[in-house]
Image (cartoon, rainbow, N blue to C red; front, side, top):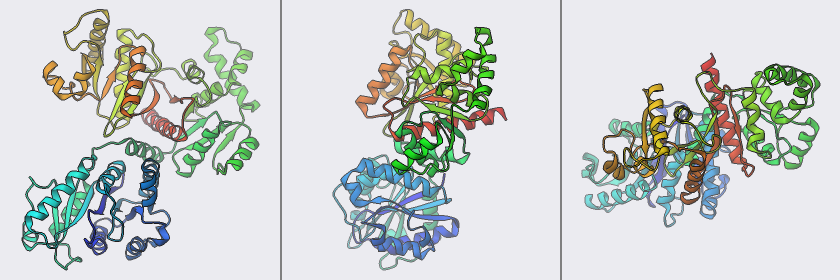
Length: 550
């Protein structure tokens, strides 16, 4: 991922153009492949003269059409839609550079009420750090300190990490001595009054440190942007069987345009081309394969009959099975003609995943196929399991779900701290279901002593440090859990939907885990962005599978 910082005025008249130019020039010395990206243009890009001037000053005018996210007007009109567009365009732009100087508010931009909070949300969603600029003109040291404190506080409340703060026209004493940490989180870069084109070696290092600072905040948008970035770093071949669904075609076009994966569509090539033309989609880079291709049908039916021979399946019966698009697509994955499959937009979960149970099957060290949901909270990611596949797991199966879920968490950048959920914490409750969780925890710890696993534990003790201190004060998991294993499907499905609908969390999944090769199911109500994200997840799983088999 490219290193980055978000440079923005916190108020009007702070001399951002000259300061930004100076900062960019200094950063170019350290990062020759530096990109300059405007988060929100003030109107059309053609009318954004201050930003175009910055681009021209560093020789990046050729990138003017891709080096911006959305308009400030669009952001005010519909923040959610504009933010999605911003993150998408930034992710695509950042892939071309080693470091990015993101331009927020400039002096020429209007300052609306709540603009710092909006800036903070943008910074958090872009997964970067912010360097705001305030004015020291006509302010005493105490007044500068107060302005700095309030600026940082308002931005930080939106989970945005502040890497440094710039004071323009700073009082002389500030140029010589920075503000104390009790007033400001991060270092100060002070420009003396009237001097906007000089950056001392010490201030340059502060700026570089802000660029290098890693954000540990994970918003739903920054998480999905990370999925896209990882997927396209090593493109995989993902088959999408449901080419008659417009959402699938639209997602395929976006995936191809953004170079996330190599897409295989099942269907009639002329039908796909005609519908793509009607929808205004470019699917020219997609591979379209007919599920009626006689050679492929024979190839897949022969192999499927061999795999199911002990079940008494004949070649003729196998041939009828593989004519079904889910079986056809799954056999493509099994035989290495595709690296993964995503389906379910127009079919049931069983229709999508049962073929994989019969062919791809589980990894050698895994007892069963299970599922997890990636729960994208406001500023972090949790893993919930099993919420979609296993109705009444035995203690051994529950242990297997916990281990698979920990591996899924690691695969998607979440440090696994596993809570084996129950209505009891420690020895506070008794009963058969508590005993089952106790046994599952014991088995999981024996199989994977390297993992942090706690159980039985109640949900509040698993996530809330204050409750954890009272109920399980010495646990390395309590109050800090990231992977939540529900005792059965009933509890898991209720739990993830309750959190999703009451907290506004984004539930990504179900992600199937434990298979030899990745196949994932979609909700029949899936949006285009859900399909894009699931393909990215499947591609990452395929990368991990390939690495493990290398």
